[in-house]
Length: 339
Image (cartoon, rainbow, N blue to C red; front, side, top):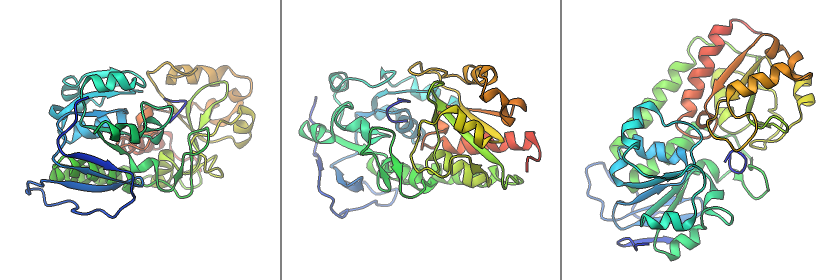
């Protein structure tokens, strides 16, 4: 989630705020690529050479970079909700963590970045670490995940709303963009192919047509629940489920428990977070709340203990959304027929 859930000048690095067509797009994996240009959230990002001192300001961007084998070109990460993926732990240990949550601009500049990436527009906007224009003035290229722009409107005070559902193609585009910027296109295609295979395999044999599901990220007093069209929507559609709140396009609307109980979802997917910025962050705390609250304790999913704990990154638009599909599918098989 955007709000609630969360310098040395580089060589020949420029960023413009113009929404131009990309000139000199991705080359083949073996090309030296002296200059690379991509379109990104209404801006043209150009690098004269692949970055050597990159900072990832969100866990999602950090894990993609690590999965692309870029740890030796990273000088910092920030804003973590969960432990790093086990297979990336060794590489991640080599990269300084600038802050558990949002770092200051001064802290970022201390590591002299030549490239900064973020999963959410708010991180590179007023009220975030710094605006993209400010980084551009400092000669630092910036990148925002395409999962958080385009058909997503972030102009309000919440976590945004979508005019069209997020798809895994948006995540794959982020992987391709970063692979292009760092001149490791072949690694990007390999990573995407692996995720696509896992997505296809996860849904095999799952028949969840008509089964309602609720996604609860954080906060017990005024819970953040998934609307129709963010990363939880990818999970919902992949498995044939129906989101209990598929009638809202807000990314993470806050909805009272009385309304939740009225819709009585059959399955509860609950965020299991390690951060401590909201109430009821861990899955254990959420389950204890649900089972003790006079309204939620009467819900079918609570009485039947149909809980699916999921880390926060699987509920955000990241490559870990595939993990979310796999874990929910596994739980549905365990629960048996629910229709």
